[in-house]
Image (cartoon, rainbow, N blue to C red; front, top):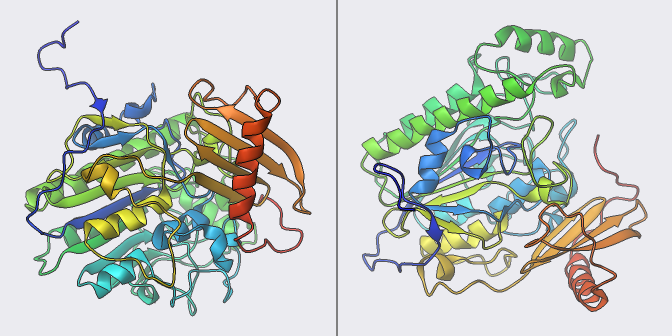
Length: 454
């Protein structure tokens, strides 16, 4: 049946259109949501909420159905996103996630190259607004890892109003100095981003916009009283208060996601009215799979799992000057892939002493269109997985790093990962097991007795 008058064009399978030869380096806006599940956008199937701004972003670019995070918790994925390397290559990446009092080992070492430091050295202006979660002062900071300016929070979570973290400390900083603003956190980040985009820029820029939405505590813009209560409980010694196990609802989660969408709409409007939209790469994704109130059907598992629900996330790319809109791709792409890809877009080489594990997608996206080579690999403290084409190997591991269980799934016919084909396909199981082990052996060991975080 033909589309009705005024209907949006249907998505088409992705096809690279080639890159213009004008040599102009793009701006890069990388937006990361926090604990947003794979199907938590209306364009990904959520039947009970509306995300028109992110849906329009996808309609003007490429929507990836098989987008992944590098890990199933916050800080390992962020370290992987900034470095383009498996989180297990760094001591800080073994914490799943970084939590508790700061230490000099739990973080992203300042001497390690990052997307920001490499672009900065190549003449880019760099900024990060929002959640850092890659270690704290005096050892770690965005300013120590390549960003020219930053405003946000060091820890993995804060109250949206009081900015108190789970150990009771105030945590909102501007360039490593405490910065007092008790408004709704999502609004603060949106306002700062709009201001940054609207400046007169003499250089191309990288801006990482790291929202905490829709991570707990479950607070919308009008829930200051809830924030005050949770803060009082936290400061009285109830260290789990901000996890908010006694609050929230599906309706509140919907409110938070729709507020996130509206905030991103303000950012994209600022980009459009500034005249920079055409040559700005926008990447949107979540740091890991969804949590309590997330909608993830038909995926199984959630945050902290190496099952699809813990690692598959909404992923959108828009670059109007290069990539055509109304396209959809089923290529598996992960957090680490964006690091070499964005460097390639800026014509910047990775550091030769720190080889990246992420795959450069530039030839696929704006070159020959050829799929990148290589498997997609995950390791978390009690699970592991590797994906090759439609096939996925999953393994469960005990505290002694011994295998408890192995499974083999065909994701093209079993997205829910219920049909274990390991006995029917023993040779394929063995091949994928060997490939997973080969990568795992190159990573740092977890501390003895490491277990899944509560």
